[in-house]
Amino acid sequence: MSNVKNPPYFDLIYELFECIGVDPGNLIEIKEATQFRTVIVPEQAYELNTNYHNKYRELIDFAKGYVPAAEYRKVYFAKLPSRSIGENLAVDLYKSNGFSIFAPECLGTKEMISILNECEEFAASSGSKLITLFFLMMA
Image (cartoon, rainbow, N blue to C red; front, side, top):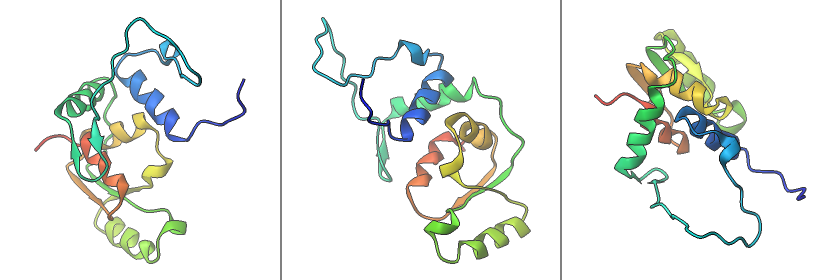
């Protein structure tokens, strides 16, 4: 048994599988040379901050159907204070304009889908968190 801890995003990936009806208990993490009769290697689903595959969008849309929508209409994804200078000014501005404020680094997959499922206005500072735009409803 390995003492290596999984990266934090593993939990988010397992949670996404749950959202689409796949039992994470059926997943096999491969840590050593393994042989299978058949292996399917999917295409890359998205490139961070640049592009995504239409099938990835379909997966997210499917997951949205199984996660109850929260009642947030205006959402701002803020950077954690330790990761940004002056973010508190942006947070105050968006709060004063009726936005609900979240730090996406602190959200699970289901929470993020729920928050953004019925969101009408979304704002965020630049960064990889903008990948969450996949969870927004298509205009």
